[in-house]
Image (cartoon, rainbow, N blue to C red; front, side):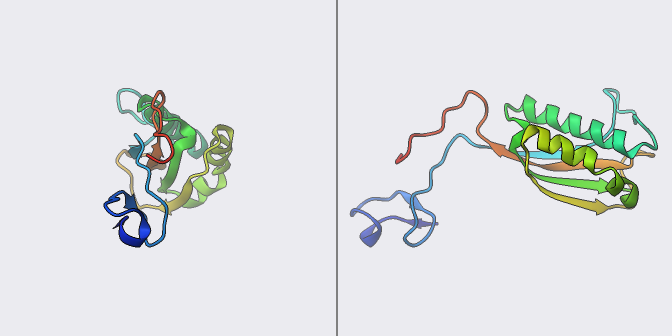
Length: 146
């Protein structure tokens, strides 16, 4: 990141820029929300839907959505999502459970599906993690030019 001055703006203009000849960088009250592992667990941490990858995927996504909403963001603000699966073929065969829900909420995250040898709870077939990015509900972004 450069600093505007000299040929990039008026003398003494020290607003940040995003590179040579680029416009100003606007900083808003954005939230970067890391979404740690979310799995198909009940409120007591017990596995739900053993041996059912579609149901496990749906519940893990519901838990992830709840975390996003609790942070003041919306599900469409999930920008990155990783699916970790112990049975990759089984999870890939029901991935539409996830992609259909993402489409319903208008989310278009960078999506990756990876096979893993184990997850934290025996019988867990899937876990989700990712990143949400956005302006929390009720926050006002800065006016242009600030």
